Length: 291
Image 1 (tube, rainbow, N blue to C red):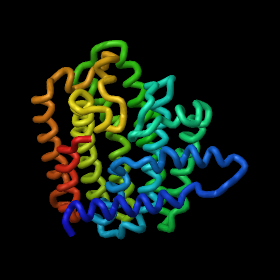
Image 2 (spheres, rainbow, N blue to C red; image 1 turned 30 degrees about the vertical axis):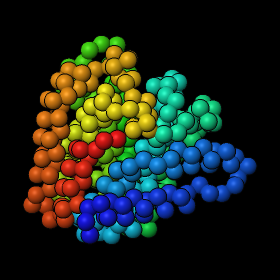
Image 3 (cartoon, rainbow, N blue to C red; image 1 turned 180 degrees about the vertical axis):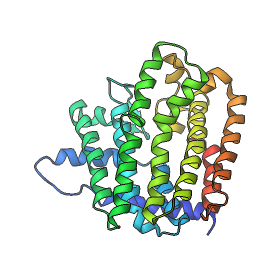
Image 4 (cartoon, rainbow, N blue to C red; image 1 turned 90 degrees about the vertical axis):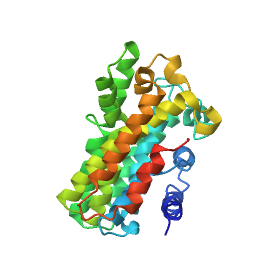
């Protein structure tokens, strides 16, 4: 199976799984509607794809990783809903649609994000997998998304609006804000398959390198792409005076770092017993993306 076909197959499987979530009609049904509005709004589904791909690479089946893959997408979606709120980035557009709070109001958007985060852990802990794998995945997700992970990165991002950051500070912030959830996705995939310590470490190193390249590409696109292409407001970093590696290094040097990190990601997979072909090509695909 070629890369594009395999990528599409992963994406279709996670879409079908997510489509089945939050379909009831309780008295508080607007909450379900708001959750589904953002969860099913599209996107590249890179995080759940990584979870399924690492599970398969470690000898598992993609179906056994689906609950974990759904969980990582739920946490990612919750973070986007909250990130778009007026008290945060105050955005009007996400994935080419009005942001959640613009459609449902701020209170419902906050609650939709809260509920998606809780539902993510329900997905992990109720997955039909051995208890040890479920607990490893739940602990991984909690650590990577919490006060010393993604949330910490958001705090550093807010604090960084008040001054010019050094490259080291920006890299550290990005490792938390963007990299941690990518790392969780990879590690949870290995956990779903019951992978070993060496494979966990390879997943961690791969995610760190891909995460940095991913964020730099985002920063480049923020200054070179249109809002229509990205499905979200672009140019806000420059307008708000935020420090990015692109603003410090320029596009040419940033492209060099993306290539360098992509090679590091691929090297991290060597000699681990993982099936690496799809993951290597995925690293290249993410490095060259245009939205």
